[in-house]
Amino acid sequence: MARTENLLDRLNRGPIEAPEIADNLKRIHEVSQRIAKIVAGMRRLVRDDSESPLDLYSFEMVIDDALDLCWEKYRSRGIQLIIENQPSPEGTPLKIHCRRIQVAQVLVNLLNNAEHATEEQSARWIKIRSYQEEPWINIEITDSGLGIAPEVVNRMMEPFFTTKEVGKGTGLGLAITRSIMNQHHGRIEYLPERSNTTFVLRFPIKLSE
Image 1: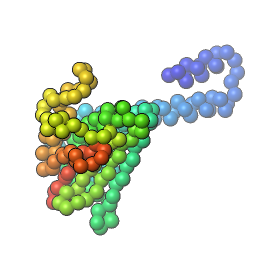
Image 2: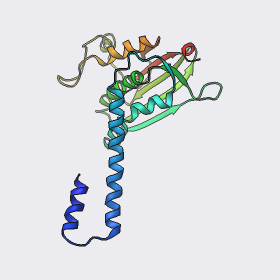
Image 3: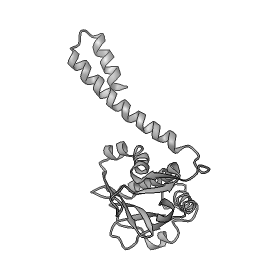
Image 4: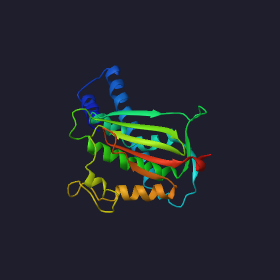
């Protein structure tokens, strides 16, 4: 909007060279594309997908659904995003039978938690890694935070339990995530042995064959 207003004001003040117009229009177009991608992602994620049948999707597709809502925010806040999608032992992209929107909702929730966990870190980064490990196909979300206190770990899956300030969290995110993973015959686990905060989503290989 600011660039559009500036361009209109500049035109009202007199002739303007074509390169200046082109540069402004290019930047307006780039920002508009990013906005359109974010809105499209939001429209997908607000749908109720709970009654949809399980279908086969690649991990890359599901992860991209979640990242549509996060890329620009991470970039603007100086958070480095690292993605590692390992192929199956046969060398093909990993795929899972899932409700695509539900899994994207789970990832968005974990990515939001990861972002909050990095707020006090001088180096802010989040890593997403997918890989196969019998009998599971896994997605790991690791952030530059230094882990979760044991007393919090013991309760963090409980509905309405939260360590965030009033107005910043409902305490339902991880409880809903666990419920969705149960519907997929999978599980969510916290890995306390890792030096950085790490959650893993496990999907059974048998359902994805």
